[in-house]
Image (cartoon, rainbow, N blue to C red; front, side):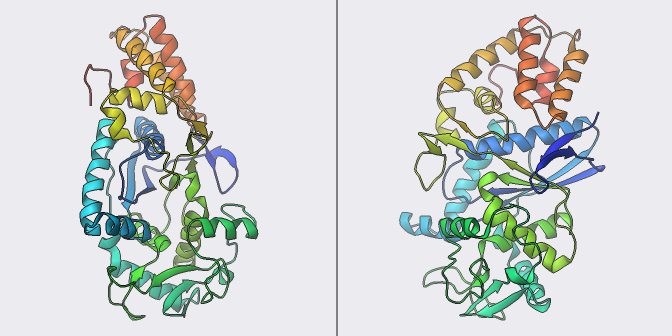
Length: 381
């Protein structure tokens, strides 16, 4: 069987030839609020992928970072009158509880940005030494004009990248920048913000540099697959790729896989728009496996709107699967069908439909459900 996945960089579904140990990096949360369904959809996609890779006999080593220092979490902590690390600890614990309830495999590691300050300083120094960064206005910036091919991962035009940078507060109008697309590696801390000493003055890291540093530290110079939500493609992943390859001189990721966005109330689900649906809240009224199945009803590359009807359908599906036989007869054929679906660019909805058909015919589905990460025991998770 050949596993085929869409590669954002190549813009096509291509063969993904997994090594014996598949090194994966998936951008994690900024822990200033609870887990919403956009987060959950992303991490369930990579959970199913890991389960299929392990089913193929591969070991997976998936790293998911925790951004415990950046503008958003500092602002949220200030509004709530709490220390930013206390807020990060509280929300990370809630996130981990939600992920466990949804039966996602634990990450190989969940490094925090604040754990990597010495590594980040070393990375920035290397970027300066190699001529890919410069000091200006008290900050250190990455020089996008010095890196050939900046923008080739996303494929976006310059004007669109500038607009996205503005939306993500990368401030393309910063007068200290040589080019509007340049981005901060190190910045002076404002009064009351956390600060670390550096050879460029006291301050804190920019957003993008932490993921490069953590990925290199945890997984090496070239990783097999890098993932995250589609909204991170630019500026975060574009900048991450550029600075990593500038420092190491090697390809940063063999394959890029992005999760499409979940919409609600007519717009993408996001904290800034205030239209979030939280896993923790849904768990008060619905079984976690029903929530998981509701999210698995949509293909990972297709943006889709959340509505409560999806949960009703998922609860009916869960009841159907649980009512199916538990013997061994029929498992092998169904498992092969599910594997074929997953190998076709993670066609999880197709795999779910195959299990539906088998369960409707009274065939056992427990092994196929397990491959999809759905625990069928009553009260599971």
